[in-house]
Length: 197
Image 1 (cartoon, rainbow, N blue to C red):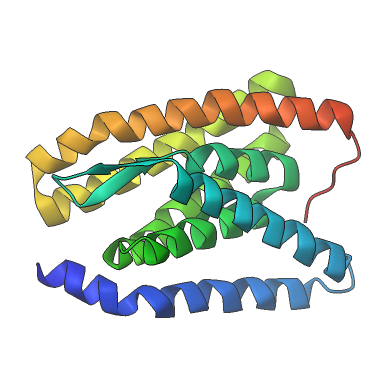
Image 2 (cartoon, helix red, strand yellow; image 1 turned 45 degrees about the vertical axis):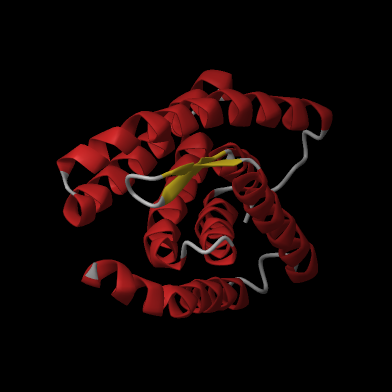
């Protein structure tokens, strides 16, 4: 498939672009944030997403994709640290996992879809209050992930393959909502002064 071959060629460039964009964002906010601490938190969040995506996974033969638990850590990072780290950890952490696992054609799409998921969750969880607000934020982000992948799979593989993967993406999103929100509640109770950028 031509689209997948082209996306595969763009994989490394898209990840590098994401890293440069986030670096520029941090540089612009250097007077408002603690750069060293923010860098450590960001790298920790990326590592969580990368490990949750790469370690527990199940291949989906119809689309050449795989199911994973990365969404739980995207939701956690976004709800705890805010939209910027949520978007970066979600997009870059997941895209690096795709690249490392041999799914390079998925990396550019993953960067956008999972980055958007993390941003939506981080942003909405700051606007909405308490556990119910975090749950709504996670549902919104999870829905963006499911819809984003469905549209891409529909365009590249057709309706049948996109539909076959829909259930797995919904399971990933629902698992992320439950585990991500629960884990965030535990961390925020234990460490109420966790900050965001």
